[in-house]
Image (cartoon, rainbow, N blue to C red; front, side):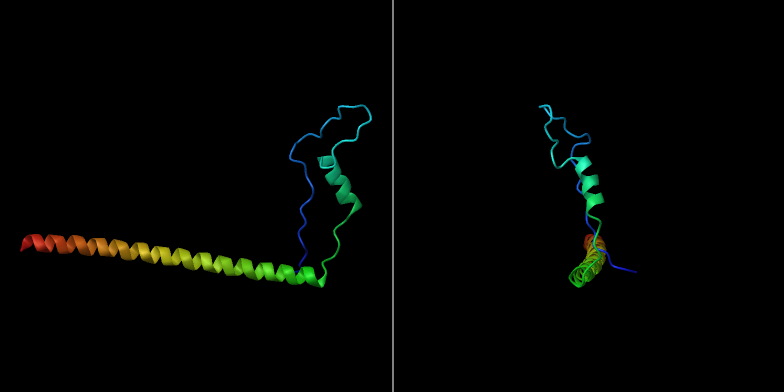
Length: 100
């Protein structure tokens, strides 16, 4: 599988392009029309060695964070289980004390 850098296209926050108030005025450069023209004029370049190294570093970081999140979820589940067991032990001890 080839690593290719992801480049987000330039898109406008507005769904429709702005209309010019003066006749002959140019539309704002950040409109959706500009994004398609820009993408057509500048096709994505092949990834260079620096970009491939950066993508590999990002992938390693993502895997590390996923593993860390999974370990955190597991630790939280174990802590919750231990707290439930402590509550049950306390209830048992209280009922045992009442019997005395």
